Image (cartoon, one colour):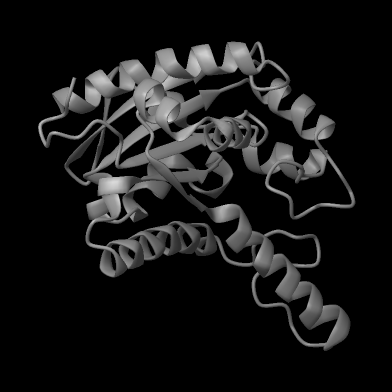
Length: 246
């Protein structure tokens, strides 16, 4: 099946969900899947990852240098590692859109060979998905499809503890949050309310964006590559049908 533009692969896949829900493990599987298999079975072309975590971690490192080495005021976070200004969460989303637009500027055939994977998490404490999505660039939203990786807060907490590696706090697969911070920022998740009006499409700034839910309470993203691949193929197949119908 082709979409109305004659393409066989997603242009933009937005991957969201609580921390440690399995998003990074899904991306890791996509990166390790042979390109021909990935395109044929998962409809994902060459991968370009647009993740706000490296941007956020850079701010943490800069603030540490400013306060501990230069004895200057911190720019982004307080001494406990919380953002000084709530709008910084939206700045991260705007930065993702800016990076995406640079890709299109520098390579007019970008989506002929590339699927952009946009990854982030948002809890209601800092505006939730309802406030984050309107900050995505319109040209990105018009090409996007969404996978929400669903786990309970308790499962997010369990896996967040499990993956912690104090030697690699900047690692995509091994970064972790203290329990108190995870609870404050991500215990409450507005996805059910954000997606309640339609079982298949989000409406963001009058743009219809197809979505599916990847259920992961049974944790197929940890050491179960066969189960993960099968579930991902099913979920992305459903999403492709919605993408073709948008």
